[in-house]
Image 1 (tube, rainbow, N blue to C red):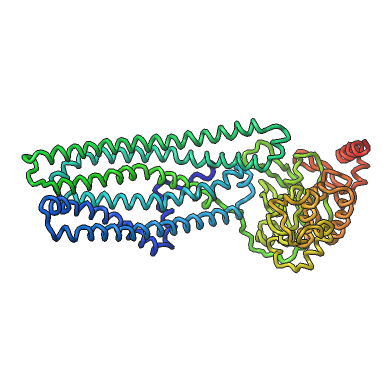
Image 2: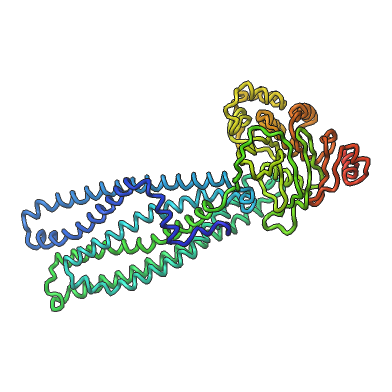
Length: 587
């Protein structure tokens, strides 16, 4: 579990907050509790009539009791079965509703979290919250709650039966109450210590699986099977040991409670066989007390083990509440953009990522006029992608500011700001849906089919889309697995063309294309970039020779800027990079 999100409050406060999620289900929850009362009362009532079963049936042979007793027994268990069904269905309904609500809230919060949140922890932990962690919450709020209420009521009713049958004998058994209470308290403290570690470990298990599944080609090519198997075995073994600690705690607590219960049964037999101490005890009274005591034993056992589920659920709730309470992306802007001119400016921008020792950007100042094409070039790690990420406010500057059309970006609403930007990255993201829905994604989903086809034509994508079984309505698979890299990139370019935004960010948008496709895409992009402000991140300098301004970055600073011809004439960083690439291409 990420350290930044395990502060969901104290255990008691988290549990109270968790129970607040049950308010929409008050009616069915009340029916479920009524079913628990009926269930517990039915068992206690059976223990109660056992006195008559022994004294009146087998000792006195009362004909009235002989006739009615079978009917009464069947009636008790029929009513109890109805109560049990209402309880099981009601708690399942409440639990599934709570899990769905928690998952939806966490997922919706993910959609509003800043990029730093996703950079700061593994995808496995984020997935585990919505899958494993939310299930632990359901276990605490429904399954464990059901056991706690039903077994607690059963103990109360059984004690009532014992007091009715023989108050002196029952009071003599209360000597074991402090011992049982001490066990329950000690077990609860140990569960709290273990539960939070289990949450984090399950995230690690999910993370390893997610990484290996996503990189299965690299694992096979580079012979990483043994290493990944050992890595998974380690995290899985840590999870196993933590769960074994829970099992040991359960075993010790259950055995201890059973030992004290056995002592209580021995005391019952001891007092019942000494008429001088308890002269009023009949065989039926002894049987009733014995049945009640026998019913208390499994209830006490479950009440000690139920704490493991409650403590796991509380730890899970604390983690989820920590995420829900974390600050989302800052969106305090009040100005809504309809369509911007596209002039943006970086003013002495600095940025240092959380936990990083060196800045990613150091005093960058850059002006990009509306409708211009600005190319960012430089070695890997020079800050090109970081600078581009400031435009849609994926990251915020540590110092300085970025302006769009003369206003700081923070004055615009995030939604309207990002509506002005089309982005085509080197790592193309496609969704497991049709080609058409991937092009007309999100706010573009209402686009006409003719416009989608036109965007695909402009991106040179219809050439392969026509060959698909259902054309633009063919599914592309998870992350476009059924398409080649170049095909995926052309669909992403078609998405940007369809958006028709005034600002265009191209991060190596043609890197995965063959020579012929690249030429056609470059022509389409040249048409698309007219009257738009374009920021191009490029490693191949031949693709940005015609940019209005080429900016050379090195270690987070701008070291050169100008046109292609001007920079070559200077013989500086750009000229050196260009000559190096020219030699590589010539070779």
